[in-house]
Length: 367
Ligand SMILES: *Cc1c(COP(=O)(O)O)cnc(C)c1O
Picture 1 (cartoon, protein in one colour):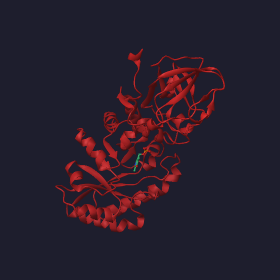
Picture 2: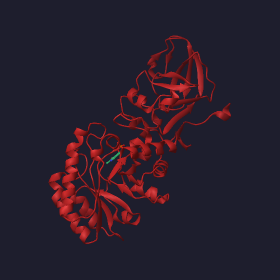
Picture 3: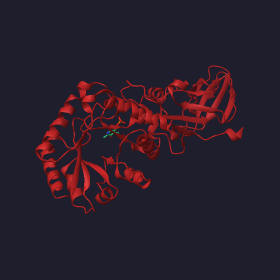
Picture 4: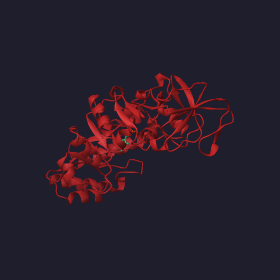
């Protein structure tokens, strides 16, 4: 029996990732930049990148250069774009590894230009089109565009694109995107007046890729969708990950027994309680409602009591499961297991936070 005892494992399905890219490509003629930030939405940066490229994505996107360099060092040759380098862009690293960087202010551009690099760094001008989180605000566009044009003429940088991000990135209401689309068109016109050359425009993330063609331009940045998450909840994507853990302990508890930290739950019936070796340190949200459940042997069973750091307790009622029996915490809807979306609602959060916070102790296994 102990031979069956596996460790908590996140099973990753590259075919599902490829299928999600195929869905994106059926909705948009634009090139797909597969966004593989946050440890590849929890699935592993390299795993997600390889599966996405295999499925038809032509470029990769990461938050910073460090993530991009890791991909290069693993042998990934596809174009990569990064958009948030907290301590500034390391021009030498960007040039050496041929990694494009989004630049969202004159200050950032100047900090790049004073560095020495063996070759011009490819820059995407990062524009605030309504989110107020990132990119240059429209008032600053003239100075940024002119300095960038000058630097390109001096062969210090190569301007590859114009990037915006939708404030309503999780909505499926095209009219909410209209102002951002107009801002991108205005930026494109400005770039063309300055003779910046043929630039790639990109604005859409997953939800807009799936629902709003007016935002697609030349490329779309598709991240959550790779993992099977449509933030707008409109499209059924393929679940790319399944989280399992073995039952490590099963006890009989009679009605009225207080269960877990603080006795937050008192059992309402006689029955078995089974313990799974996963807790909030592994990404099981401590805030889950009393509806949360897992699947064991095809049945749904409720999580009871407080989520501990490393363990959760499951009310398995009349069923005594042997040590090593595999429980599914989340998986594909068709399997009857809870989905990421259900966990998100139990935690009053979004599916992204569930998948991105699966801890490092959980084994990633590519199937
Ligand atoms: C995370 C991110 C994306 C991807 O968003 P999803 O909704 O996960 O597809 C795209 N662009 C930027 C700038 C991002 O930070």
